[in-house]
Length: 445
Image (cartoon, rainbow, N blue to C red; front, side, top):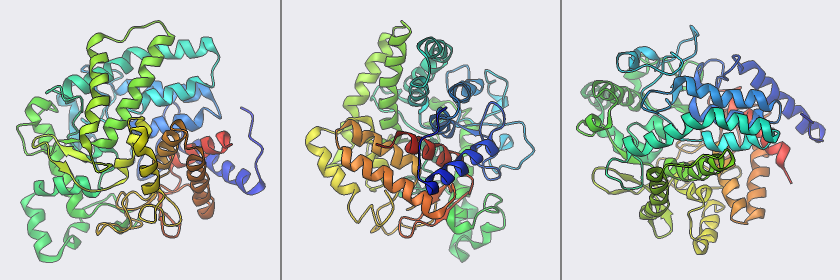
């Protein structure tokens, strides 16, 4: 593909991004990072494909199609599809034991939960780089599995026909330890975790975890929270990953605002894909799609969008970056858009680099701790896309330039960045940061 003309510094940064993607390429899948994330993650592969399209559209299409090898007969596409590697991963197949419940389309081992449905977005972006005939062939190959995934989300996770799907684990949200999720998850902490916390906090648990060997523990979830999430996996496993059984357990069930916003946008893309290849979306799914657009309005109070407890219908009143994703979905009424733009560009969310994942004035804010404050490139990308479609071009361009600036300032493809000083944190050589940088550089106005 043609390489965009760039200043020397950005050209070198682009080469770093390309090198990261090549280093993490396992053939037909791309791992998020060499050590901390050695397998395939659902929404990671989607963001990766959006960048790969600028290097090799066919390879990008293969990245998306490879997700179907993990699809369950029910239609669910797992959040992790395990690669054939001996690299250690703390929540590997032995923790999930999904092989006792089901098989995957490609015989791969997987987790028993899903992740934000970014597949249709990625497919459309990749399709833009293809000839008409190649795009149609790609869409026809993807469509049956993609349709079944969207149908599963509604039939399995919206059993009461609310129009909003429910998540059964914070890992499904992709934003594991935002204050929203930790508030509703911590009551499920194992008794041993509660006891140790009373004695000396999380220190006694740190020696038992292995996920924080690559990065400092203070950049990850606390040990107590991690072991609570492990307990929820055990509950899900005991319920055979069946929502009807899960809702009878202690597992927190959340109508996550960001997940549902991404689904609403994905529904639009699925509809466009179907139309291009002459397919008709089933009537029941079309109805669910319409209900989603209407129902997300139940999650807003005074112009702020929140997630909701599925069981109690109580809004989880924590402001986080998840509440800005309705801009990406295109569901924010026009008369409220400028107010949300003012919010996301205010010092509460934007210090120097941003948008921060948790407002800087929130007591839970930690600038380098996973989803408790850091800037994430994928979130900036999603919000900027929504701003552009709302016609807020200056705000979209500013956010995209700011995103490139924070990556350039560090000189490396980190998992996330401090909104205060731009320093990189989490895993280095992170694939979606590299991929989305390629996209930002290629599409800059």
